[in-house]
Length: 168
Image 1 (cartoon, one colour):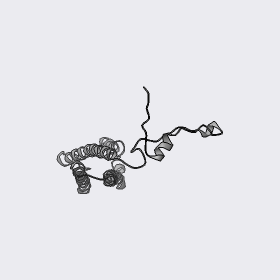
Image 2 (tube, one colour; image 1 turned 30 degrees about the vertical axis):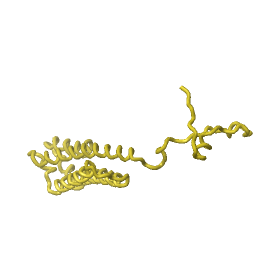
Image 3 (cartoon, helix red, strand yellow; image 1 turned 180 degrees about the horizontal axis):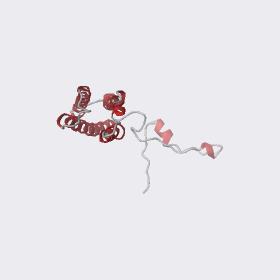
Image 4 (cartoon, helix red, strand yellow; image 1 turned 60 degrees about the vertical axis):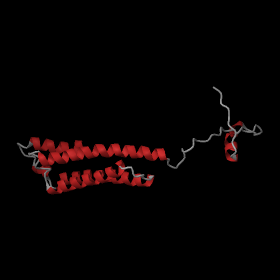
């Protein structure tokens, strides 16, 4: 397969893709000159914005399904008295509301700029990080783990440790 160059009117294009003159004194200065593909510079293209939007849609769908399932389990299942607190339900409900608003924006046909997508990304992942950070503080701050270390509460200890460390 041979490459036949197409004549260009742009002088910079000709300088970058044209032949290197042979009158240079040393071969080290004869570097290969190339130009990157169009749209591969530091700026973002429309395709990158579409890709980010699709990835954010998928991420928010996964997080929203998990949070909603856990929230409903905490409301409906008996025996989850440790997490069935009004403050926990308030934070979890607020997180679900934030995710629903962001999901509505991402799934709408409204065009979003790259800056708007980055703000949504920061909102989504920042609120998730804040929620799980609050869960860690809430689990350890009142000493519930230390109070539960008595004979007969081994199942409770394993459940608290599993929730606090591994699942988050």
